[in-house]
Every structure is written in structure tokens, then in C-alpha cells.
Length: 300
Image 1 (tube, one colour):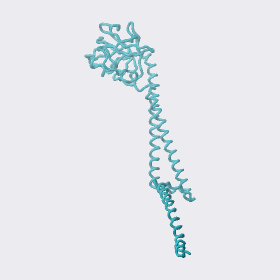
Image 2 (tube, one colour):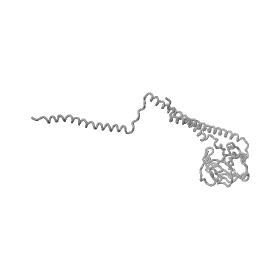
Image 3 (cartoon, one colour):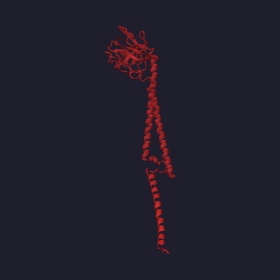
């Protein structure tokens, strides 16, 4: 009964099933591992942020380049404030406002973007406090460069002069005449009249939409594996039923070919149209000898 499994058609089906199931399980496991890695990164970033509050600030040079292990740590730098920019469309505690970003020209020659604080309302350079003059030492939390379009960072272009949508070396390189660090700092204590901007977790360390997409893909791949198994058993059951019916002589009726029923109706009409003609000819044949007999009988 199961000899059909050795046919070329079923060889192809079985090979496909044997390849599809391990592939789906592998992809589902890989997506699950990605989700678990993001959960671990989120937990590590949270623990790091809590421990950073109690750790002493370290020199900027010791924490560069910024990565997951150094983002969120407290750092210190010394230099002179230079050009000041505004970063519009930034929310804090549910209110709209803007960052006041000032470039700190360090002794090493490069400039470090420093967020000195946040102000409510529309970006207005007249309301932003001027930076302190002379040499200053800043202490704050080290942050990685922002990517426009990610984590709420605006990708808007065409901003007025003196404004930038993202805090990154790539966005600032054409706005300031300095070499820039690929990092920025938010002050622990904001300058007078402004609110300190809290540090954010490093990229790909939070339970964001991408993390839950990985979890969703995990479920999809395992569902695909189950669907392949279900369809294989369904096809097998149908083939077994066909084989059993064939052994019992129960075969499904073959469907009529297109046009067969119409031809059958035309032939029936043709036969019916011929029958009246044939009966009239027979009647004429039966009456013809009698007519001849009557004609041969003399009239008295």
C-alpha cells in the first residue's frame, strides 16, 4: 500500500520535507538566540548605568572609541567652548523642546560635542544661555553618535542655520570648522537655566521593536516547520486513501471532457429529428400496395 513512497514524485516531496524542517528549526533557533542576546545586552546596560553613577569619571581618552562597554560611563574632559548649536524636536518628560549643544575644543585639538542642557519650546538661539568663557572641565556621561531615523532621532533636513537634527560627527562635520570626536557627552549637571539630559542606552542594547521582531520571527519559523509536517501527513493520508479505494475497485468518476455533454445533446436532437421521417416513409410503404389493388379493380 505504501509503495507509492518510492515513486519519483514522493522522493521529491520527502527530500523537500527533510531539508525544510531542519532549516526552519535552525532559523527559528537563530532568531531566538538574537532575542536572548538583546535581553542580555539590555540587562547588562541597565546594570552598567546603575554602577556608572557611583564610579569616578575617567578621562575621555581612556573610554574611546565608544562601544557597548563604554557607552553610558562617566567621563571628564578639559578645553574651551567654541561654536554652539541647537538640536530641535527633543522631548523630555513628555514635553517638547530642544538641546543646547556646544563644541568643547580639547587640548588634543579635536572638538567634543557637549549637551549642556534642555530647554522647552521651539529652538531659539536667543534663549539659549551662552557657554562659559575660558578653560573649563566638564563631567558627564559618554554617549555614542546618533543615527538619524533611529531611537526617535529626527532625520529632517533643511534646518535653519545653527541647528542640527542629530548629534554625530557625520552630521556636524559640515557645520563646524573643527575635527570631531565620534562621541558626545551629556553633562551630569546642566548649566544655569537648563535641565540636564539623561543618558540613553547604547544602540542594540534595549528591548526595542527590533528585539520583539526577532521574537516574532522565531514563532514564524517554528510555525513553518509545523506546517510542513502537517502537509506531509495530509498528502500521505490522501495517497493511502486513493490506494485503498483502488484495491477495492472504487475509483473516482472521470470528469467529462469539455464539449462532450454538448455533443451528446446534439446527437440526441439529430436522432429525434430523423425518427418522424422514417415513420412517414414506412406508412407510405404500407399504403402503396393497397392503392395499386384499388386501381386494378374494375369499376362497375
